[in-house]
Image (cartoon, rainbow, N blue to C red):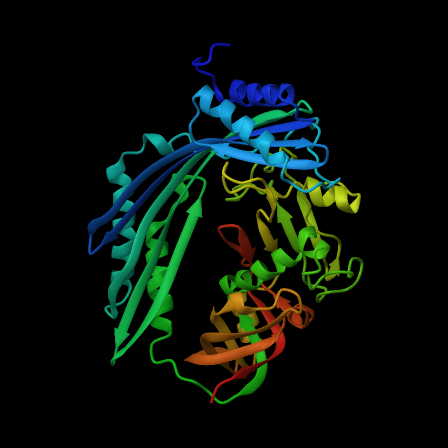
Length: 451
């Protein structure tokens, strides 16, 4: 093949693997990724930002004598790609030996997922800009106290992944999604509150800009006049978005990497009860419509539906090929790869707490006194090893089963395991915020610290 010959992506990754093997790699992998992004941001009806970006490149992993080398390039001319292969082979020499480095075998089949909206590219840019304007208009029309737009945005992405390895694996897929985001400011009596709304979907026709704007406005309005209350230990009803904040910590703690490095609050608890019976936590890369659904992970392992906590009992952990080899188990297909610029890590896909049967309104109605937790601040400070957390909180006070007055400036503190064990109600309103999803839940008691 000539040095300047044009290859398609499948030919390219196969050629990279072949050259790497001939160069001395015992195992080799080539990962090609292409991404296109559109971002439209409006303020007061005018386009403030219009960004169209495109990026592509290839990452090369090689393994020799238990040592791993990696290199990448965004220059897909063959001489540049060959240099990248040589760089990866050279990097092997300085790497530490680790017997668990390996690559997966090709599977019998991949799940057939509908990841692309074939109409999305044909929709005129003007129509997409109008979606951003609709988001802003709906928010300001919701209530006259909505005074400012921090953000009203339409976004879409198209992507393609192709992977090959020296064990005979060769696979590819395409996908796209679109969505919108709004951050609006409500003001009254010298006070200001901010609210957000968002929706991302695989299908353009499913996007509801009015709903995004109204959600942002409603959240901002609902917290106007918020005050601190006296410290109390009360039942707390968690908004689905707040639950996903906690799921971010839980997802990291449920990776085998965290366990193997002694950084997980779930270490040593497989088979044991770690949550209330109503709590089931799943990672599902095959989820229909899921934003992080894909037929295979960052190493080519087929996507899977993995139950991590089943009715309160810990079932296991998320694995990529490396952690699976270390534990002597099969990979769960959770090699996460943000781009071609880095080797695969370990991460969740569509990670969620499964819904229960109660309507969220019924859960609130069944709470004589407590806090409806709409917002937490400082979740990143939670300790992923002990599970201890202490975060700022805002929401609506519940009195006799009714949402009454807005509350801000409070602090909730506790432990994530204790929180999971005290869940006594799970709503039927499962909602996803990109890669994390949850319904409304209630815990029997948390100390809500105020004045």
